[in-house]
Length: 175
Image 1 (spheres, rainbow, N blue to C red):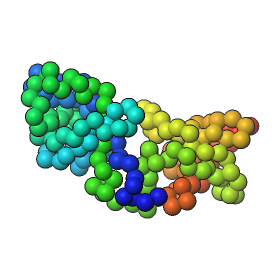
Image 2: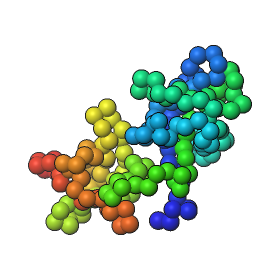
Image 3: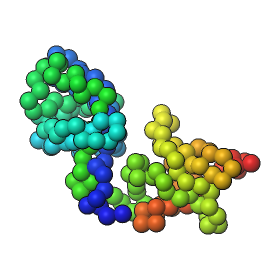
């Protein structure tokens, strides 16, 4: 997959306005909120279909509990930011820090083939869930779908070029 044609990487979901001065509460969808939500950075605002709605520039960014509180240039009060509720913030992939060996973006996993360590096909990744206990993938197998935590004890190897996961399925899960 060529990076130039790659879709932007979603890094946050707008929850709601915070206060009266145009701040927004953002639920981060990245493991590096302070490195992503930086004053002066231009971000893409996407709707549920992944279409770009507009571009915004951050004028303020701070971490607040499990959220980030952001302000955008030109949006000075609560009424002006209400329409962002439920939308997503994204960045062009080329502006993201390079991934380490074996790392992937969660949204890339859809459609990846899943095989066991004996190279037997187990299915295709059909959904990715960000659950309180961590990322979990749904795999559509030949007989049924199953859920697998996206953790080191189950994910043995990732191959971005081949769009493939090598996994170890917990005993009894496919019975």
